[in-house]
Length: 115
Image (cartoon, rainbow, N blue to C red; front, side):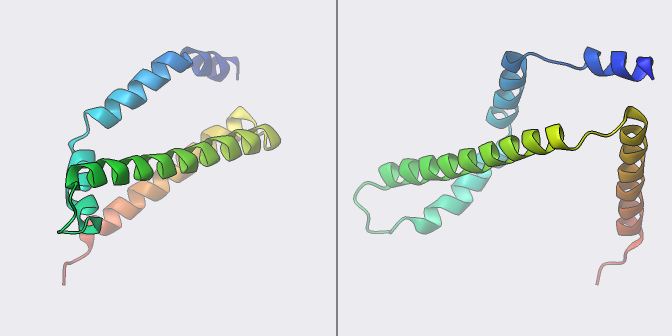
């Protein structure tokens, strides 16, 4: 049981490292740029005078809404994790169960025929 606790402590990271890792993941992800280039222009009028300004404004609105949602998720998850305490053994088996579910869904998907 103590080994699981010591392993958990070795994975702890500083807030700065977590922030940098998340920032780099998002900046270097080409899917984000492709999404914005494909999705946002649909909402800009073809006869708009300042298309680039509208594009930037819509991107900022999208990012602000995403920030609100992510903060909501982080706060509610932190609150729930303080209220719901499970043992390390239960967490270990829950992770194994969820992993087995994902593997079985992947196998099922691999054997599904396309129609």
